Image (tube, rainbow, N blue to C red; front, side):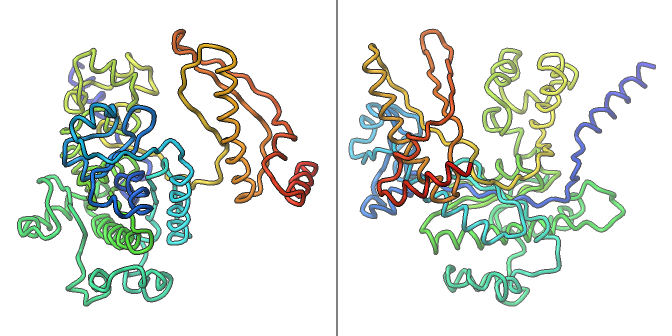
Length: 433
């Protein structure tokens, strides 16, 4: 009976690791390298070969890769960074408007490229695409570039374009790095060529007696990522890293493996090759509270967390969060890519020390001015008007947040517009809503 219970528990865990989509999806992840710094360098090309740090308050929000080669990193204090790199060029990045504008342009580009696929914006500098339908069809990349994507040809350098439109034997089967159970191999690895038949057989977790198509589907996805990364350089002068996998978590992890300006494809049966080397904070969805508790239990990284039984995780975090953690550290993720629509909220925030009420009022008024600009932009782009205003104040000493909300004042909305004609138009929209 004891042996039967063990088999039952093992079967239960195996069932929990099955994804509802199987391995049939092809998820593409684009991660803009050092996004804020790239925006600043495009605005001021003189900075391109210099160490650049983008500051917010007294820390570096990000640095370019020249600065990282000098040992600087994100979230360093400014004083510490300047000591380590005296010639560091510091740019103020507290106003996010230009970063939002570039991010919106990139998002619009991806939606145009993938009109039939869900495109999700994950923050300002990351984009996720479920390209399963495109990668599963009979279309080839040269065919797409000849018809629907003909407008992309002008964005890619002739040398790069030849990689995708040349003879079949000259077109790469996949691009960038490939992770399979035997290890991580570069695109042109002779050793990898010898293990390809094994990789193809091990790729699909579905019925082993059926022909496996997911290897070819993921390889097609990697070629799409490579092409579009070249397009981002040609159109926006923006470099990005890419990840390709069968779910969102692994695609994001894959995109972080070989930054900058590179990409990685992770086969389904090779997830453990990647994850067992990682710390818990690099696994999307494993939050701070879970990491802290696992570390306290003696499981500070993924390799150690993989040894924790499902029952123990569920007893620590509850049935739902325990199961989610059990799956995520194994690279299993059912979450769909959800097409991003207009934002549901528009917010601005800042950290400030205020000792008196007048100082607090002054800080809030500065934020309100910026908020009204954002509201005006939202109205001009999407034609939407605000309904609710909410003010949240974090009390650091008491470690709590106090919030109050009310109907958004019509007079405040109309203040967004300078001309009488624009105010009249906005007032008519308010009346209609």
